[in-house]
Image (cartoon, rainbow, N blue to C red):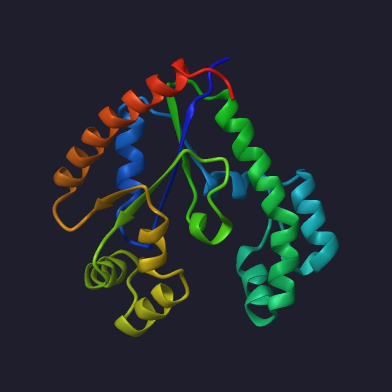
Length: 207
């Protein structure tokens, strides 16, 4: 089976990544989203949820037996060791779930959408696509979207990796400083390029 082009997609909060994902899907490109996998592996009945409860106790469950994300966030926010323990449990499960979804998806190339892509490394990807925006625009969009004030919006941005680090890791950058229509048009142009790269990769002999 010919190897399929794998494109990692990331971007800062309120940069426009969801719009980019949506346009790729409209173009028939499968998008495997880390957020979807992170929810799936801790669904009731899943081994991931059992492992989290075993490590952190019944207090991280709601009355319905679902993961209480707010309670869990409170625990890991206060204790870096807890955060590392949680990552040790969930990250391998999330990666495995994403790989299974990617293998089942159809199309000449696949988008692997990972918010913490730069922090976690870009292995097993052929290209890294970053959706970028000026910080002032990010703050404006974040305040409007999440109804937070400027101080809180700045704190959220500060908790992420830097814009410079994302740009440095990128093979391709979509600058989202205009309209939604302009961003969608930019995705269309990039799609044409990725289709050509995917065709070249499919024709290449195996390593």
